Amino acid sequence: MRDVLVSNWHELRGWIKGRWSELTDTDLDEINGNHDILVSKLQEKYGYNTQQAEQQVKQRLAEFEREHRVPVGS
Image 1 (cartoon, rainbow, N blue to C red):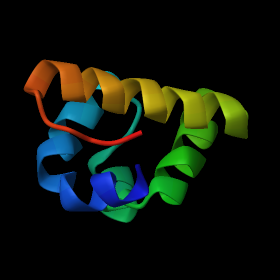
Image 2: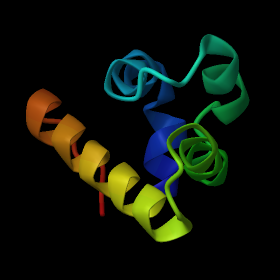
Image 3: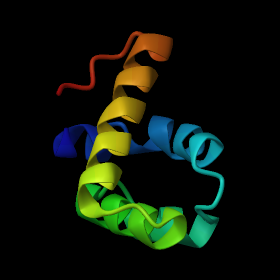
């Protein structure tokens, strides 16, 4: 899943911003496809604990895969 964020970041960036509107362009620049930074930003912006943030990322990537028929892994 971590590699998917990096390899598909250009496609995912705008899509992610649409799903997590609290993430700013600066946040997305910092994330730049890095799974750990995304999880950290979700914790910061939404008050998720680590497990909740990880689950959100997993669910959103699965949603992206279904919508775009792009395999993003597990």
